[in-house]
Image 1: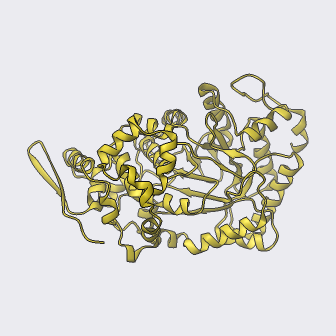
Image 2: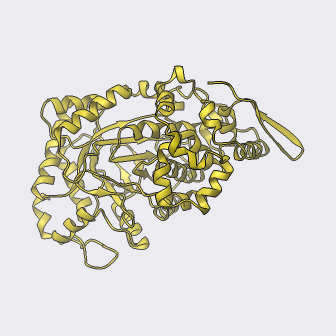
Length: 460
C-alpha cells in the first residue's frame, strides 16, 4: 500500500508532525504505561492533543489506503484488507474520524451499526475510540446489539451473562465442582462454565471436561462448558472423544503475536471445523471462545511499532473471522507494565468493549487487576458499573473475586448479582428459565437467586 503524506496539527503555537498512520495512532492514544515502555507514547500532553486533533480530521478512507503493518508481512493485515466490505462501508465513507464519532453518538442505531460492521476495520474503531470520552465509549457501546448462541442465547437486550470461572490450583475435580456449585447457586454460568487449567495435559483436560459435562447433563443446565486449554490440546481431546462444547484460544492482533501463542488462522479454522462437526449446540453453533488483552503484542515483542490499543483491536478481526460465542478482554491481567493503574484499566476496558462491539463481537470483559498494579476493588466497581451501563455481554464470576490459581483479582458471583439488580439486567433467557425451574431465582424483577435449592444439594 502507498505511504501517505505526514499528518500534522498545531497546538499552542507548536506544529507537530506524525510521519505515518501508525505513529499518529500511537501518539493520539490516552496515556498508558505499555506505550511508554515501547517508546510509542506522546512525549507531552500537547503532542497527544495535537495527534488527537490530526486524527479527528483524518478521512476514514485513509485506513483503506495505509496499513499499520504491511500487507505482505502479516496475515492479520491480509485478513483485514481482504474481508473489508466496501458496500457496507459506503454510508460513512465520506466521514473523518471526528465525523464518525459524531455520527456514532447522534445518528447511529442498532440497525445501522449491525449493517456497518463488515465495512469497519479495527484501525477505524481504534481511532475513533481514542478521541472519545468515557461517556462516549459507554453511549456508543450501548447502541450495539450482538448476539451469539450455543445452548443458550447470549447478548440480548437487557441481559447480562456470567462466565462461571471455577479454577483450581491443581485441577482437582472436587474443588472445581465445589466452585461450580457456588456459582450456580448464585445465578452464574450462563455464558460458560469455563476452567483455566493449571496444566495443559490432555488427560487433565479430558477429566475436567467429562466432570463438567456430567454435571451439565445431570441437571439439564442450558449452558456450555469449556476447559481453556491450548487449541492443540482441545483438538487432541476431540480426537479422543471428549465432550467438547467450545474451543478456546488466546489470540493477538499480529501474526507474530499469534505465532508466540502457537497458533495461526489455519489452525483456528481447523479447530472451528472440528468443534462444529460434533454438533453439540442446541440453539446455535457458535463454537469458539477467544480471550485477548492490551499488551499481549508488546509482551511478545510482536507489535511492529503499533500501540497496544490498536493492536488489541486488530485481534478482534481475528475473532470476527470465526463467529465466536464469546470474546473477552482480560483487561488488567497482564500487569502494570501495560496498564499501570485503575484509571488506565478503566479506560482500556471501555475501549476494548466498544471496539469489539462495533466490529460485531459478543464482547465480555474480565474486570480485573494484578496485585502489583496501582488499582483496587473500588476501581473495579467503577469499571463494572460503567460496563453494565454500556451493555457488556458478560463478566467473570470468580469465587470471592480472588482467582486462587491465576493469582489475580476479578469479579465475584455477588458482583454480578449487584449489577443485575441495580441495572435490572437478567441472565440469558434459557438459563433464566432453568434458574426458575430449579428454585434458584425468585420471581422478583431483580432475579436475585434464592439462598439455597434442594435440587442441587446432591452436587455438593
